Structure formats: C-alpha cells, structure tokens
Length: 442
Ligand code: GCU
Image 1: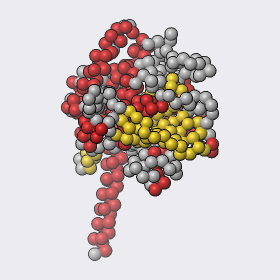
Image 2 (image 1 turned 90 degrees about the vertical axis):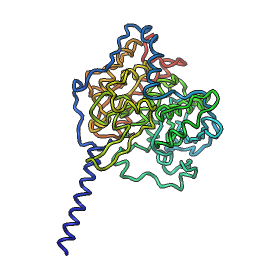
Image 3 (image 1 turned 45 degrees about the horizontal axis):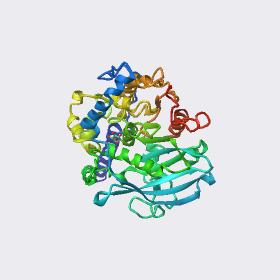
Image 4 (image 1 turned 120 degrees about the vertical axis):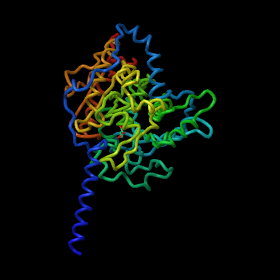
C-alpha cells in the first residue's frame, strides 16, 4: 500500500512540474526562449512605405488610418460625453511630501451606456507646471498606490482591499502594479494611473456588450477594447485640460503589453499626447502581424493550448471583428504595424522589449520600427537612430529598447522610460510656451 501511495505521489508531483513547464513555455511571461539579436531573421516590413515627400505621405494618411480602422482596431470613439464627476484629495503628503495624490472620477458617455472610472493622480509639489505620464494599467489604483484610501474597482475603499500578492511582482516585475511616485517626482513628472477594465471590462462578451451600449445620437462607439481603452487616455486629458499644474504640451501615454497596444492607438488619434511609451506591446501593437513566431495574431485572438491540454484564452474583444476574421491568415492583411507606427509620427515613441519575452516578438518589433523610420524622417526627426536592437538611444524619435528578462516592468524599465521622456518632451527652459517640437526640425 505504502509503495502504491508513493508512486501516486510521484505521479502527482510529475504532473505538477509538467503543468508548470507547459505554462512557462507557452505563456507570455515566462518563456524559456531567448530572443536573438538578429533582425534579418524576420522579413522586412511589408508593404514598404514608399512616400518620397511629407506631402505624399500626408495625402495618403487618412486612407491608411481608415484601413486600420476597418481591418484591425475598429473606429476611434467619438462624440462621447466626458465629465469630471468628482476630484478629491487623497494624500497631501505623498512620498514624504514630495507631491500629492488625488482621485478623479470620470464619466464617459451618457444614459445607460455611460461608464465611470477612477484615476489616481500623483503630482509633484511646486508652483510650476509638470509634465504628466498617463498610464492605463491592469492593476487597480489600490495596487498602484497601496495603503491609500482610493476607490476600489468594486466601489468600496482600497483600505478594505488586499493588495497584489507578492508572487505577481516576482514574476511580472517590481513595478507591474506599483507606481514609484518618488522616482517620478524626483525627475519632475506627475503620474496618472487608471484601471482600463473599469472603462471597458477585459472580458470577451462583456466588452463587446458594453462598447455597443455606448452608442447614442452622434456617437461612434468602439468595436475593439484596445481603441476603447485608448480613448480613456483622451478622456483623462479632457478633464485635466484646464489644470494649471499640468503642462499640456508635455503629456505622455504609457502602457504595458495590451495597454502598450492601446497607447499607440491613443497617440495616433490624440495629438495632445506628446510621447508614447509602448512597453512590450507585442501583437496588435508594435510587432508584425505577419510574424509566425512568438504569440502570433492567431494565438492572441483564438488562444493557445499548452501541451495541447491547458487552454489559454484568446482576446477577440480587443479588436474589430474583421481582425478576428484575419487571425488565421494574416498574410492577407493589406497593412502591417510599421504603417501604424508611421501614423504616430512625428510623436516620439519608446518601444520596450525583453530578451526573454519572445511572446511579444522583439525581433519583428525592430523590423516594424525600421519600416516606420522613413516617415519619421520625412517629418524631420531622426527616426530610429540606432545600429541594432541593443543600441538604445533614448533621444531618438523611435526609441527601441531591449533588456534582459521577461514580460515585466522592472527598475531598469522605469529609468529607461524617464530617460526617453526627458529627451522626448520639450524642456521648458529651452522652449518656453512652445508646443512639442523637441524632435521635429522647423
Ligand atoms: C496576453 C496576450 C498578449 C498581451 C499580454 C498582456 O499574453 O496574449 O497579447 O500583450 O497578455 O497584456 O500581458
């Protein structure tokens, strides 16, 4: 009997190890692979952008944008009412008095389809106007600013909520949820964080239902959550537009992974965003939709099976149905993501990557950056100005960054984000009162 129990015990242990290995090799964060530094292993961006002049590029820009709306992201929402419902002080002495923490309650849309979300706004002390990083996140504001009496996603107080379990940050990085406000304040930045799922839930079925309920007279509602979340960034800018402590010419949008996808969309449409940080945005973000390694569009949309057994869900609700239909044959797509990055030009963009995060496909991301370079140059910027994947140039208008490690937000990333922003956003003492021209020649 003892022997049988022993054997069963070992079988159970083996099964557990196999399950862990399956998850590690199949899911986004713990890939056992290591991205090469070879960019030739990915095809060049296709179709190539051939515009010879800025005028030529700009004359085709609206049509290209329309194509992306039709085949990938759905429309950018418009006509939605945005209202600041409440603004309250949470902590007048955040980070040992280096700044303050407030909470904004924002309503988007009207009638039964209206959505409410909460923004935690950390601003450095001082009389001047500060640049602001607006970050949409997977984490609730309770996890972004632990211990503060902010509103939890269920409407209760964060004080009554447990914070994120430690193992999450061990896997996804120290700053996957936590906002290092002291570091941002020390370099002069304000930081606004909100849980994207409060605006549009990150669940297939619920997301589409809530997006279509946003429809109303004169309203174009989103058909994909990526664009819908992006519009949340715009709503935050709307309600802060008159705030005297924020420098409206120095607003950056920051997102990791799925939120990296949507900050690119936000930057394409909302030109009040002066810099975009798309960290590990992957497929549907800065990686090539035609790439066949890493997650691939197909797996992102339809999910995957680890060892043919464990089902990893897909995310069809992030995109318009047409993209879902293309997922099994992305070769036929008329566009690829280098063109989407080009639509962002000349806004400076940071493309963050991790060597172990092959799921997000760092190599094809570099290829997309190369493909977009031409348009950034047509705008008079330096575009992608590095000799290879590892030659990070935070001052370039397309700033490709790769570090060791996986799908996460680490200290090294936070420093790189700020190095990029310091270069991308105009320095007030250099261009007082001017719109963002830091990376654009006159
Ligand atoms: C999943 C998804 C990715 C996404 C990632 C994330 O792995 O498939 O496309 O980038 O989640 O948001 O962390």
